[in-house]
Amino acid sequence: MFLNFNYNDAFVGAVRGTILLLHSVFRGLQAVYQGAIPPLLGYERLHRFNSIAYDHEVFYTSEEYNKRGFFDWEREAIDNNLTKGTHFLVLSAGGGREVIALLREGFEVDAWECNEKLYTFGNTLLEKEGFSCRISPVAPNMFPPIPPGKVYDFCIIGWGAYCQIFPREYRVNLLSQCRGVVKGPVLISYLPIYERGGKSKKVWALARRLVRTLPFFFKDVHEDIVIFQLGVYEGISEEKVKQEAEEAGYDVIMIKTKPYCHAVLVPKAMSCN
Image 1 (cartoon, one colour):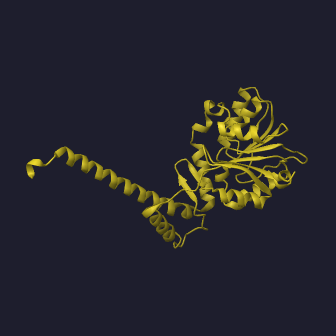
Image 2 (cartoon, helix red, strand yellow):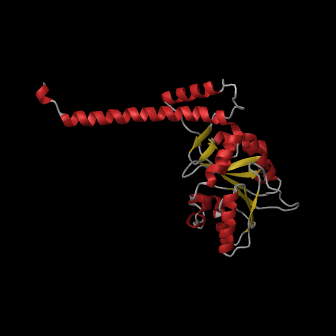
Image 3 (cartoon, rainbow, N blue to C red):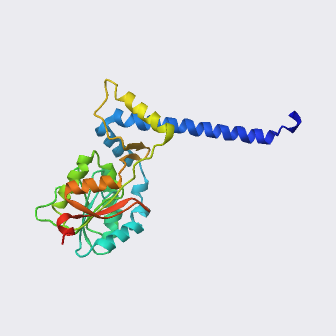
């Protein structure tokens, strides 16, 4: 029996066992910090986390990225739902990718962004490209001070930004105010709810429960809040989109999960026409 022992099989088996163990440990640690850190920080500090993350992220402040134009799904959503008009409102404009794409097509654009590094870069790039449009600063989670009488035909809430507007009251409020100045569709995009499975869900729930017993525990955050190296977001489902749209006075006329989660909302009065 000893003579039939295969050292190669034993070595490969040991490596496989180690990988499975490390994977299990990693999932456990991930569940711990996903369960513990969001409620430990609270909403205010989670938003600050996002500000710091974008301050150090170079991808969104590259000329190549911001001059690439629309993603295919953005292009399709705009083409299929822009029935008329030329005035666009871009919220969470970032470094200007959507703004530049619209300006190249001859649209009139007003754009707003809360991160100073992003809008500073965006304005420098817009000037370099020869556009007079500028991205204006606005406080995080706040609707911009639109001049009285200004009306837009279409609104884009920048790529993935919808799920970084939290708690949900901020999203509903932003959409409600948007309805007052945008007479056409609103395009939102977001990340889905993080799926926790098996034992990791139990570890996540235990870590969350333990943090909530601490004397310095902050106001609880939504269970769908996810924190990772590039920022914090609240996972959004189709049901959430429809509920928040309904509360803000919108109908959802299109919603897709591939290749990226996005939806088009229209004011109820518009969908009834």
